[in-house]
Amino acid sequence: MAHHASAKKRIRQDIKKRAGNRLVIATVRTYIKRFRRAVADGDLEQAEVLLRPAISGLDRAVTKGCMHRRTASRKISRLAKALRNID
Picture (cartoon, rainbow, N blue to C red):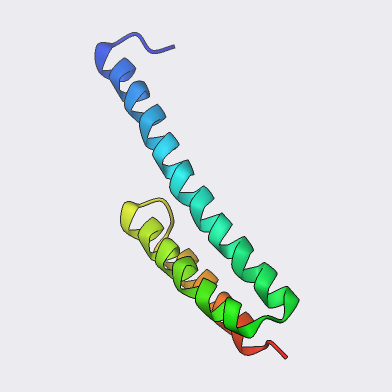
């Protein structure tokens, strides 16, 4: 347990930041799930529409510091590859 006022403040700030970060990541995961569902159904048009918010969400997570840029880049690459491989 923190004893100093600055440590207590840091704990309060961390709780708020974690909640915000989790919200951003959860939103990105939702976009990715929707995209992957469209890919699994073989719906090319819907997948193309859903790819844009997924990429945008990943970029936003990087900008906000919730995700490393290379992690986001890898995920974007895999999503684009999945779109190309729709039969």
